[in-house]
Length: 277
Image 1 (cartoon, rainbow, N blue to C red):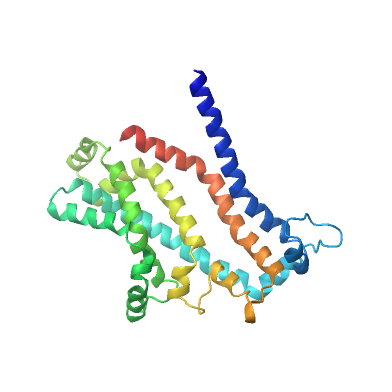
Image 2: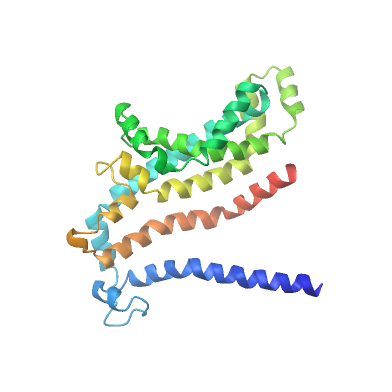
């Protein structure tokens, strides 16, 4: 008992240290977003005082310089549509791979698994060329690209959960006259919801914060929030630190609120998969 209690206390201390390590940078960004740009560089760890506090002026300037509302619109559209497409099609694919057992589906499954370990840097230049050739270098086309890059992990997660669904449920629905599409949406999909929510949350955080893929594919024509933040850097390395800190706060607040409000679904989905698997 004493050993297990000591191990538990040690793990608690480690987790607290890790939590503080992750939270401190967010606190520093929020704190410096209301300070004058000159004071951010001179005293980044100092709390705002009467002479350093500038209120919302950094936010107003950042939103104006980056066209933040327009960038947020592009980010929201791409994120929502990409996540919806990923969840729908990868869950269908995982169901088909799991239920149709032959050599072809096995190969397809391992190709999805292999896609998880291929570094993005290995394929980014051919991907940009193909995206230009197929006219995918726009907010609608990049959704298909995200589907390709996000399908590996999503199919892997869905496949493990589909295996736990009793085939007898689908057979009973088939006897009642349901088509494969009806079986999926009426029988399989309701059972997959915990995993679907988990997959949606993970992909939302990835797509919303992604910088490299939109930068390579969309360029400056359709700036998402990460690209807009990058363009606050002026010539010769000059950076408007006040505006950048403010825009960073506006960029991370929605995803933090989204994650905190949905984290219980992640735990529920993982627990459900562990129990059923």
